[in-house]
Image (cartoon, rainbow, N blue to C red; front, top):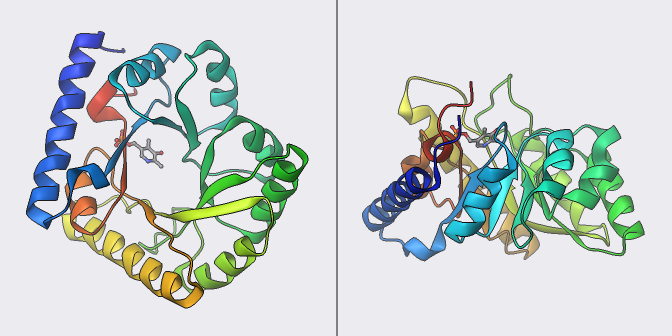
Length: 231
Ligand SMILES: *Cc1c(COP(=O)(O)O)cnc(C)c1O
């Protein structure tokens, strides 16, 4: 169940404080880490809370759910796709989302480019990299990231803002930390190799945002710490 707005506000302030503390430890500017509210499974009121709190964007992991919710939600907040995208939903996703964080194949990027071109827009994306080498996760394998970026950069209606990763489920916090460090290293290598800034690193969720900030995250995707359990 969705908490009331005052409770949401307390939780959002607490998450902001966690981000600030992690930034201080890492010697980073707290303004360099964005809080993305993950509203999946929650009603449009959750999006309204995020907007009222002043957040720039919400994250959703299913195209269909976002298509139903966005018309019922307040305007003035951006929507980002953070879940796996199937080819047959690429067209709808390109019209619905302000940014796709889960671009992970050449085929998908080609379809997104075509759809964005027809809509007369430039679609911002992040390339999702399976930097934790988790067989259960989507994302391009680290060895394929360079070729995927080259393909993305060849497309006229796609803009690549950076990279995204999800840490494997693990009881060992070092697994998440290594996953995030690996994404940053891949970004640094690709950025210097192509001269593209790739300034956005979307990594870290409710349970592991400190490790992500320590490794250079610029967007933490937080759901349960803001809205409660989704079950
Ligand atoms: C659900 C989800 C999140 C948010 O997870 P919480 O643990 O609830 O913060 C972040 N990223 C992705 C890709 C997700 O699917």
